[in-house]
Image (cartoon, rainbow, N blue to C red; front, side, top):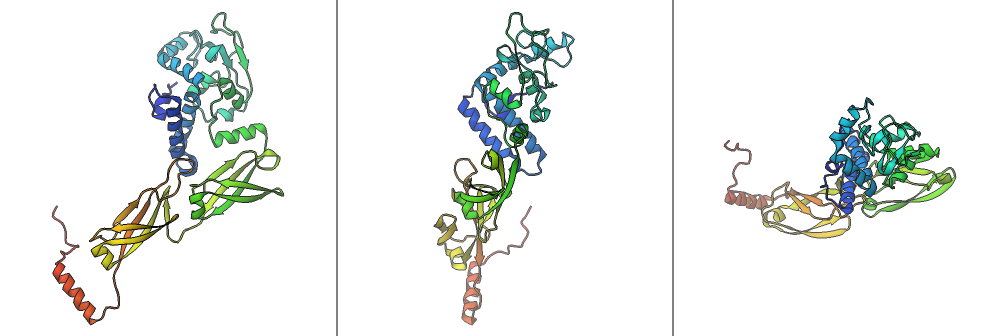
Length: 353
C-alpha cells in the first residue's frame, strides 16, 4: 500500500498552521472542482486527493496520529509483513494492531461501501479499520495489552464525527450522505445575466408546490451546479444548475473578462484617453501613441468576483483600430502624404532568421 503524503498533496510544509492548511485546501479545491473541470478525470482525482488530505490535516487529532504514522511508516509495513496478516500494515505494532486507530479506538465500518469510495486504501486502513472496510472484533490479536478498544459502527459521517469532526468532502460524498439518510434531492435550473454573476442574485424556485428562494453567489460559472442543503420539501437538498446568458460586449475566461476596444486612427497614432465599459461602470484608459491593432490592455480587478473566494479577476481590452472611410480626394492626398512621410516598412516581409 502506498503511503500518502498529505502535506505534499496540499503543498504545505509539515510545520504549517491550521490556517495555512485551510487556505491551501480552499485554493486547490476551487482549482480542481469537477464543476469547473468538466470531463477532466485527472482534475476529479486530484479533487478527491485534496479532500482526503484536508480531512486528515484539517483536524488536529487526526493530524497528530498521521504525523506519528508518517515517521514510522516503513516500520509499520515490516511489522505487518512479519505477522502473517497479509494486507494489514498495522498488525503487530503496538497502538495500531488490528486496524486500531488513534487513542485506542478501532473503527469497524458497516455502512454503505460507496460512502468510502472517494478515499484511498491508505486512508481507510488507517482511519476506518482496514482497506476492506472492517477490522477484527474487540480484543483481537494485535491489540495492545491493557488498552481500551471501542468498536464503532455506522455511517461514514459518524466515523468522521468520532475522529474529530473534519469537513466531509464536497459534492459526490455529500450526495452519498443524502443517500444514506434516504432523503430525496431535487434538481432545478436558473438563468442569470453576466451582471448578476458580478454581484450575486436571488431566484425563486417551485418544487412540489413549494416556492423557495435561493441565493446564487457572485462569480458562479456557466453550467455550475450549486447545492442548497435542507431548503427543499421535507428538508431535502436542492441542486441548482446555473446557465449564464451570452453578453453582447464581454466574453468570459474564468473570473477574467475580455472585450474588443475600438480605436480611431487618431487615437491609435497619437494616443489619448478613451472610455472603457466595465460591469461596474465606465473607466478611462490611457492609450499610448502608436498603439498597434490587437494590443491588449489589462485593467486589474475589473473582472468578475472569484466564486466563494477573495478578490476579482481582470478585464482585458483588445485594441481594434477602425480606419476612416469615405475619403474625398483631399483626404486621400493627405493619407498618401502621411504614409510617404512615415515610410512604413513592409509588415509582410520575412524577418531574418
